[in-house]
Length: 422
Picture 1 (spheres, rainbow, N blue to C red):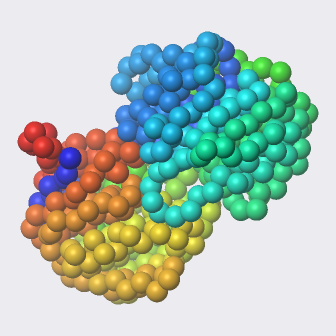
Picture 2 (cartoon, rainbow, N blue to C red; picture 1 turned 90 degrees about the vertical axis):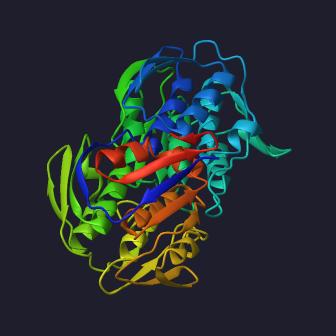
């Protein structure tokens, strides 16, 4: 099993390109099921979750062609299965996103209940409730969501909670429904907006995306298109946290700062000096960061996907930070690993109190989920001595060649496999 070995203490210097957003690419890949015409996608990140989704779509009958390293063409003109099996779905909760498109275009679907990172409960009841409101007949059978509908019909749907994948699933389903669908309490994330923009290019009639009220007027069919996936705001934020923790001078290219308001604001408060343009961010840090309080909330608030990385930065900050996690109940599992590196952190329920220390010390730590793994890499980069991060298959789900990009910035980091250093 691969692990990362990091010799910390060096400031980061140089330039790195930000990849396409995983959380935008996954629903956009699933949207290929909505049409028989080819979909060509650019800026697709090379990630384990992307590979899993492509294998899942392939099992359904979608043909995929790699035009280049980050460009894919998908064709769903000959779907021969309407079942998403457990062995593929179990590793990734986003697999539930095939449910809406399959049901909308083919009138039925059988999708295993999803898995993913063990960071908390992520029930699919909001997806099911919304699809039932659109006229689907749904029941749970032997761990599978089994859904049928002659043709979905538009409805007003208000979810009990803000759910990103729920909004995406229902929006995709509603594009082919008869009549008008209104999604109230909809997620506003940039990745939801990116999916909506791609669907519009396919011929969908959608308005209000980016607000909490999305209106979809159903059409009879969608066409193929070509689309460029939005840059990954979480990857960009993770590199910015890294330079805030280590010090240095880095430039992120092919980024989209306009999607990163809350992240950039907090980093500025921490003392990170940033020069921002439409597609790049230069970040300079010449002193320890200042402790920054965080409370995770839905977009446009501070994202839960950046909480762990900010905690690593706060572990080395001047002062004490109070960090409150409101989205996922198990998203403090990285705390014990950071403590192994010398961090001073106490947890009380959904609140972590982080007292900054002057130095972390390298140790062997274990990644517990995707963003936790990034926080441990950041802490290892800043720590004195050698840090080994185990179970980095979590990292590979959401960060493209992270160790390679960090080496471009001067970090001493290498991937170690059972076959030796890579």
